[in-house]
Image 1 (cartoon, rainbow, N blue to C red):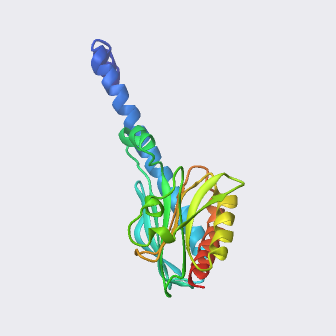
Image 2 (cartoon, rainbow, N blue to C red; image 1 turned 90 degrees about the horizontal axis):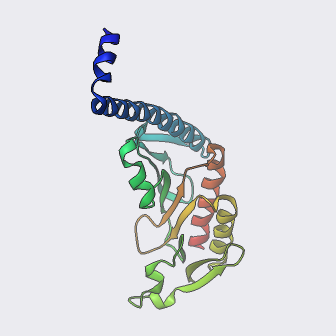
Length: 220
């Protein structure tokens, strides 16, 4: 039966090409979904080790990533959520890379106390808020991280702690980082985004430790 099918396809070259392409896409989807699931669970396991609390899995690791909460949230947070964004559909891979949306990990946290210092940085540009002349934008101070030639902005009376741990984040995770934001006028106040290509799951506990330090610094 299989031989007859192959013989029939051999006389239909266009259909053969389409069949081969579809087969490649199906195999790619299955293998990528399995890989994303395994990688997602490895992230969740290490995130569990980063806190004395528990990981509350809101969306289990799978083809499209995961969404979890750390509960109870570690000090100094009221809430901390972690999302792993990825794409299992091979048809959207080129588009996601072209628009700058490769697989990424996003950590968002709400603080227990009001922020006294703020910091914003986005890869490749100064955030628009720091350049705007509306509201309190004039209070933002543009700065440069000399050893990486990155520009960022701070606001507040004592941003030195934030600057120190921002530099620590860049030293440890610089190639993966694309956003660090600590802002008091939005919720959640803290957001850190990383591209996950090449990210070792064992690096996640020190990442959470540094983000907690950012939260403490922002409240001083």
